Image (cartoon, rainbow, N blue to C red; front, top):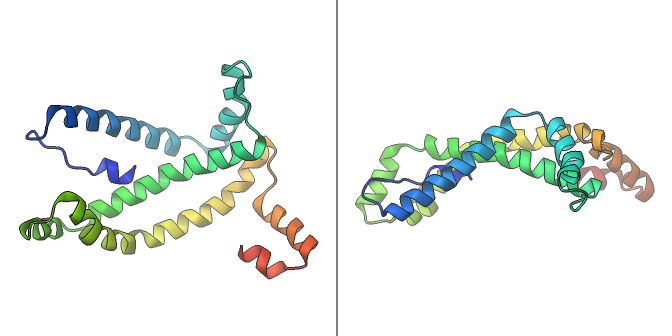
Length: 167
């Protein structure tokens, strides 16, 4: 999603490409804004309780699957913005230099931009991982035990305390 938001689109491009890219960018933007703008607890309640209600019970998610879905969708929105910001943070001269030696957009992204982006976004992605660990306690509202509680139960059963928490 972060990469899609940074795909350039000029007036010289094909009209079909501009329309499709505009639609995809709008959908991605709505997704990011909605899931970054609402608390995870609301998302969990909506996905677990409201989806079966609105589908008349046709879609009835298991608790763990709903929890994975909530964390994945929420984290995806945040990571998308982190990646988009990382791509935007790369100096425009890097793009121009790569274009001047004949690289196309895909080559520029893979060989020039992404190595710099990965270095730039590493602290923010690490921070998002820590936030995910803390946010699993929010999912208790739909009946999923907290991540550290589950790790404690598993470590007591296997007596592999360090290995369990490391995993």
